[in-house]
Image (cartoon, rainbow, N blue to C red; front, top):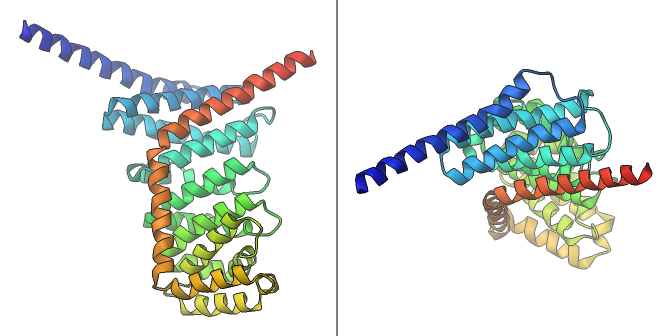
Length: 323
């Protein structure tokens, strides 16, 4: 009896794996047999199918299934971003939610070290860089910046990011005309990149990022100022030229000169940030945020899908009422 039960279990497991493999490959076969989606709803449906396949594979605990589904999902998300940029996907209602979903998908996948190479080879970095613009929604920009920050530990990804103008795109988001949430997201990504790459440190200085970050120290939102402090600490760590320019910019800042508390906090972190506790705290904070992002990857995918469905439902209801 026990032998028969064991045989049935093995048969059921083999059938389950086969079904999941078919589900993983099915969306890819659909996309390979046709051109890029021409409508927002078609692109959303395809990406949603890939996301569901990834979630099923993740729940199964099968690394092979997860690898297959994640690679197809990555390519689909990249195609969505590129399609929205080059006009292959028609601009209309739901396009912003679709791009937010694509950015969130790439951000969630970037939390997995095993996914870094597929992200690199699938063209995800240029797609993410294209989302780093105030013309996109705040969630899309924040997800794109967080994804690039998560890829900072990979040297090949950092080289590709520099080659595609990613550092310049992040520095542009530090300008005062960008929303505070975008500024903070860009500063967080630059902090993680600068902590790993002296070339990024120098590039941010050449592009005028130090002055912009110092201006952010006086921002009304505390989280924006805090992120700027840690980014400046990472930029000056082990870089004498940057350290000199950071301290000179802080001392010359009229905004900080009028706010004793902000000036004191900035000098405290910057003076201890290399190599003291302030910089260690920044790295611990970045690691904690990265750990939380990895643990919440599946929840973000489900939440992003739900938000897109709600937006599409609201748009459909509005269109119906307009008729």
